Length: 88
Figure 1 (cartoon, helix red, strand yellow):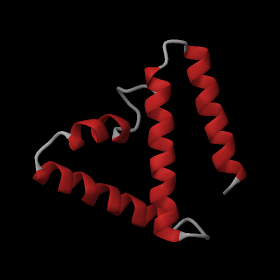
Figure 2 (cartoon, rainbow, N blue to C red; figure 1 turned 30 degrees about the vertical axis):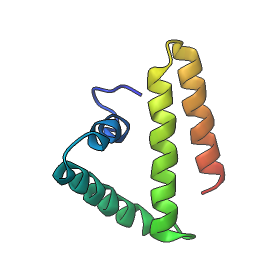
Figure 3 (cartoon, one colour; figure 1 turned 45 degrees about the vertical axis):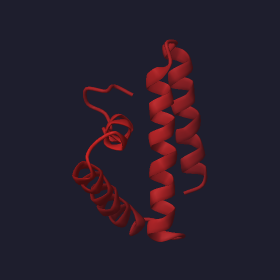
Figure 4 (tube, rainbow, N blue to C red; figure 1 turned 120 degrees about the horizontal axis):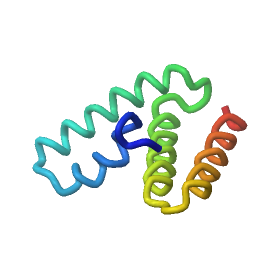
């Protein structure tokens, strides 16, 4: 959950929402490309499953970054990681 080297999607999502249409369209296009690539690695669901997974992961990461308690943040991330791997 280190914002300096971690995933930019949770941070950019809030900013993109308040940005010009051009920025929002670029954000959408980037997510679409990422979901297409990830979807090829997912045996069930493809791109739709990939975009859903990206949303889940971005939300989990955003919440973990907002938590003041580092242990609680790490516990949340570990629980989500376990859940994703169990459903892979």
